[in-house]
Image 1 (cartoon, rainbow, N blue to C red):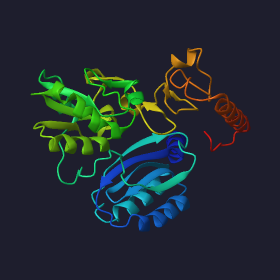
Image 2 (image 1 turned 90 degrees about the vertical axis):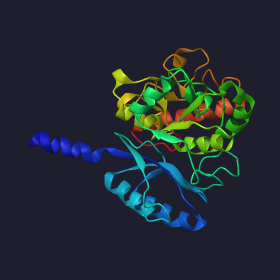
Image 3 (image 1 turned 135 degrees about the vertical axis):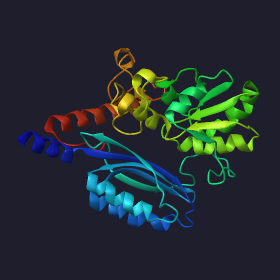
Image 4 (image 1 turned 60 degrees about the horizontal axis):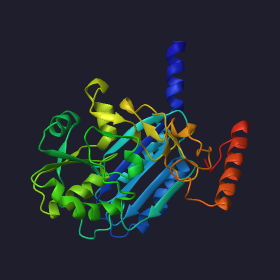
Length: 313
């Protein structure tokens, strides 16, 4: 009985993380922002949500009851009754504050006529995905940013080398001949970028376009490691930094300056200084920036010693 109660107590202390997106028409997203932010604040939920005329996107964290309350609110928004989301658990709150922001797009591609509500590529489950990308006539394209690809991707995937998703259309125009007569398989972290990228490729005349349902996160949860074609870890946009199979926390940390993932090998590099710089950003900031980063890291270290949270973390 005591062991059972201890397990229940531990489960109650766990933080639930919900990653979500949904494409729907919000005629006036500004009217949705206040009530949504107020509810999240009242429930102690933290994270980031984006609202645009094309829908909602973001990741939030909080107690089980708090997340359920916010998800119920979102499902009641226009066109969101069939909202889907991805959940994970954490022992500590991965966000420092709650933000609900208004944007032109919930994932920025910069192409005005891209409409995932009209049509997208063929969805594939993890098992079907493995079969598809093992075929010689299939080109696998990773739609994520270069720093995400650097710590993990699917075997044989093409890395466009983009620093932001809005660079993808230009990359495709410059490289489309490489994929002549190929079936295209696309993937991203949770699926949202592929909603737009597959719609874009279909509009460009590509006939056979597929994407991984639920993205890498769903794949890592569903596909056993001994059957997986994934290599490395998956970057996530919260304090976990990266996850592996079974969505277990990875070995990467986040650079305090550029926020790129920092591998264990990077942390042994002479250019690495905790909270200040990593090998990838060593030439991107000046001395005044470095001084500011060192001061912030010093304050974070003091807060950790005192057992207090720090909003700069």
